[in-house]
Amino acid sequence: MKLHQIKSTVDEHFAEFWRIYSVSFPLNERRLIEQQNQILKRSDYHSEIYLLDDQVIGIIAFWTNKNFIFIEHFAIAPEVCGKKLGSTALRLFVETTEVPLILEIEPPEDELTYRRLIFYESSGFIRNSYIHFQPPYHKDDKPIKLEILSYATAISDDLYEQFAQFQKETMM
Image (cartoon, rainbow, N blue to C red; front, side, top):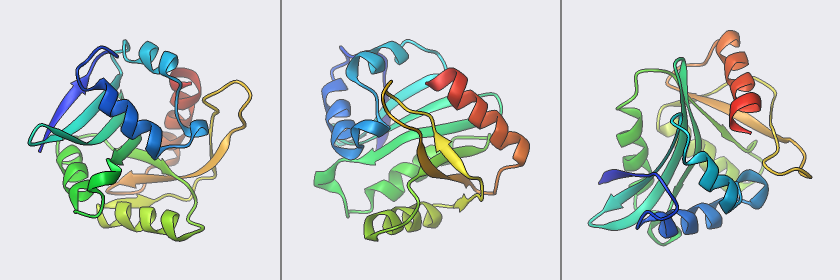
């Protein structure tokens, strides 16, 4: 398994990235293609695909900051889910980082959201107790209440505040 960075919408793998991204996240948790095209130009944003035998099997999109990396989107292609590829892909990513990793998930309320929490916890992520609202991606949307997870230890109040500020001022 290897990672390939998507640097523009004309990349040969962008269509597969966009397909997985679109089917894996509801509209209020993702950008429109025009917005995506704009952030691909940023040096602190990274959009990558996981390739296995030249097949795109997953995506990861993340933001880098000197104090943390925020995994904004991580998904495995629906047609290969259940084959332990998500654990392998995430491990490939986390093993290459030296700063704290942060991600958001929906509060566990049903089977799918509980399974997602269990997946991340089994991959070494820790639940943090912050009450967090993701700023809206689109003008008419409302903030979304999400939980903060971090790898492999809880984050400090100061780091959480840095992340929340970064998310409001830089990402959105």
